[in-house]
Length: 172
Picture (cartoon, rainbow, N blue to C red):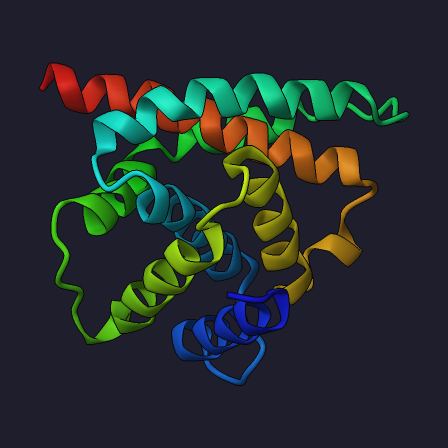
């Protein structure tokens, strides 16, 4: 799948999930979490596999964030993910507990299939970063953030929360 096709798929998912009207920021961030975790599901259908891969991705993202000149503090991102663990558990359940999505998540199945096609033969870590940045651009969040370090830091916090939440799921 070419880059233009995946961009169209993302636009379609955004419109189907959030509609044409201006969405609340909370809804946009929830959508972005679905989008990013669905990238994992596309490459790693098992949540256990995805959790193992997340650790490698975390190393890659930390290398990326260290290369960006920025002195910003992003502790609020860490708190946002720590304080919303229940939401993350619900999203993970929606994505991995079934391959059948209800009408409100119908876009998710299409996105996962298109991501799977896009990821074929590509490096996962670079593709995750590329698709995540594309999603943030599509949602208009990139323009609100102070730097690309903010975006990569957000991705890092999501992946850390995913790893920690994945551990909770396996214990339960």
